[in-house]
Each structure stands twice: as structure tokens, then as C-alpha cells.
Amino acid sequence: MRRHPPGPGRTVDGHVARKRYGQNFLADEHYVAKIVDAVGPRPGETIVEIGPGLGALTGALVARAGRIVAVEIDRDLAARLRERFGPDALDLRVADALAFDFASLGDRLRVVGNLPYNISSPLLFHLAGQASAIADLTVMLQKEVVARMTAAPSTPEYGRLTVMLQATFAVERLFVVPPGAFRPPPKVDSAVARLTPLREHAPAIDDRARFAAIVAAAFSQRRKTLRNALGERVDAAQYARAGVDPQRRGETLSIDEFVALANAGPGVIPRN
Image (tube, rainbow, N blue to C red; front, side, top):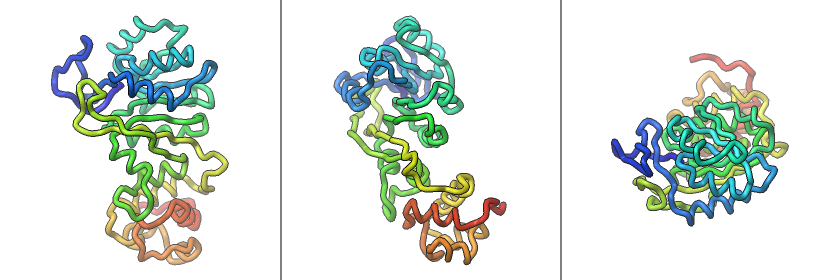
């Protein structure tokens, strides 16, 4: 399990934590048990752990599910995991989760992981792009990131991450994990969240690239009105069709309003 960058040369159970991977390791058995109970893995399910690290959560997942898949970028940690778990218990993929094709593992995947803060947003976007293969995600991140994931419009935490995730998943914060649960301890609290794909209940987005571009532009300068932030991407007729006042700021729009705004326009987005 990996988190925020430790000091240089910090060693945990004989492993020198690598700063570039942001390695901190979950070590508190109480919180390991809480995460596994939240997941509720069962034999026969495809459990996929991102960043198993030293294997604290891995062992508990294997005990409940019998066999899991894990994606680990650190080759030294991968070697340790292979020594501890045989192939009948752990299907280990040595790969970068940001580039990994999770859909290649099948469908109805139950994904679990302690996501490194420095790549948490792009990794969540990557997983959202493969939501059709996912049954649920149970992930641990910095508490402030989970606050952004679960935010409501017109709050300081509401932003691009909120809109893009909530257009794809139902997002729920489960519980907070204190720094002392990790070795070495990070300087911030963490939180565990569950994301469940909306599937047929997801808003109908005509052009996901256009939707993503409009959301990104709307939050690129939060204090700007939509008219100023979106520029030529949306014209007066499209605002009218969507029923959205161009004098509003992006942070005030609901998910459905962003979808309406994107669906009201052309499929091709003018370049700046």
C-alpha cells in the first residue's frame, strides 16, 4: 500500500520506501479489517488490489476471497509478494496502474486500493474510463480528495474531479483513517470511499470528450462566469437549449446541468 512521500531512505520491514512512488504502508490491523469488511470479498469474485505494497491488505483479502489479482509497479515489492503468496492465491501483475487495462481482467471487477496522492486524480479518471468492467471501487485517499469526490455544488470542494466522478459513479465516504495507521505516518488524514458505477442510471452524455472539455474549462478559473470560461465552446443558443444562465459560475452547476450544456452543443469543440 502506498501513500505520501516518506523521508529519504526510510525503511519499513527491510524495504527502502521509494519517494517517486509515494510509498507509505498500511500497518494497523484494525483498519485493514475495516477495509476488508467494507469490501466484503467472497470466493469466486474478481478482487483487484491496486498497489499491494508489503501485503497487509493483500493477505486479508486473500483470506476472505481465496485468490485475488494485484497490480504493483515496484519490482522489489512484487518479488516479496511472490515469495509470500503462491500463484494459487495471488495473480500478480507488475505494471503501472495508470496504464493498466483493468477491463482485460474481465467484468464485475471489485477494485480495492490505497491510491498514492500524487496520481490519485488521473488514476480515478483512468478507472472511470473502464467503469463498464467494474462492479465497485473501495479506495483510500487523502481525506481532502474524498471531500472533493463527494462534494455538492456551490461548495469549495466541488470541482472537475467531483463532476467527472459523479457522472459515472455513486460516491460514498465510509470512514477516516488516521496517520498512525501507516508506516511511516503521513502528515494528513486519509479516508476510505466506495464508488459504484451508475450504469443505466448514469446521465446520458452524447459526447464524453465534449463533456470533459466543458467541465475542465468551467473549473479552470473558478471565479469566471461560464460565458467567459467556456468562450466559443458554447454559444447563446446552446445556453438557452440547456436552460443554463451563462452568467453563472461553473461551481454552481449540478451534474445534470453540465450534461445538458454539453449535449446542447456540437460534437466538435473549437480549439483555443
